[in-house]
Length: 312
Image (tube, rainbow, N blue to C red; front, side, top):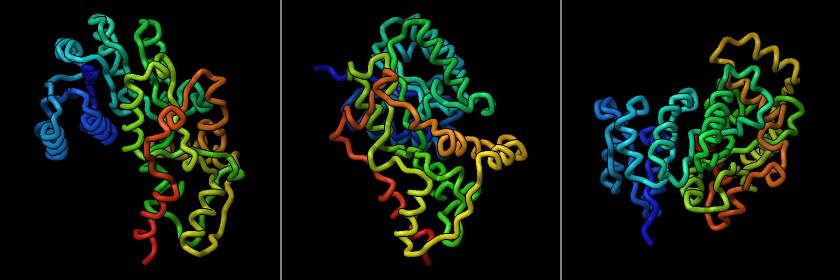
């Protein structure tokens, strides 16, 4: 059978680059859309050359150029957008083009985080999740076949410091725990998110659904994360518990955008926005259940890599 042709927008970003590689590795004819400015940026140009050498077809264009989008969308069966969340609304023209062309079998918009319809902090996040929710409503109103990827936190965010704001490595003396420390959050490696995303492309079980990632070895509370880290360094840490009220005060007193890290911590580890709901009863599907054969990095394995950066 002829393999599904995939267009990836945002391929010079971290996640988009992994998605493009995962698409090629799965033998999909893979296209990416790149701005002219990407070729003058040394870092992005290196990624483009790497992807081109791997077999990706590079198309010049951008999300604000409808004509380039039409030409690109006509070449493929599936469109995956992996632009940064702050630019989520830039997908509006793309959605209009997908509707106009009328041949796209699935659109995967730029979400790749918490479910914007489930978060309980939408009034305090400066529109971060509202923008993603707005794109969902437009996609649904246009009747465009879709899959939403809700992978929760990337492992590169917060986990390298063991959820310690402002730090780059896990603590070795004292640790701050937010709330009672018993609310569970979820972390997934970006490379693994890419593999699950490409697996969902042709799967009818994911059509017009949200696919969540809650890998069994990656769902932990802050208390559990600290326990894991203490066992790895062979040392007990001094623990400072920050109440919900105190955390909310810190959020108010910290200017934007510096307070976004605290807001995300509040969302995941106090309100439980990543784990408070049942996936099946909410109409979603869980990626590790759909694709049990796919390898994924566990939190235990990730924290092993942090030991060298922390222990002299």
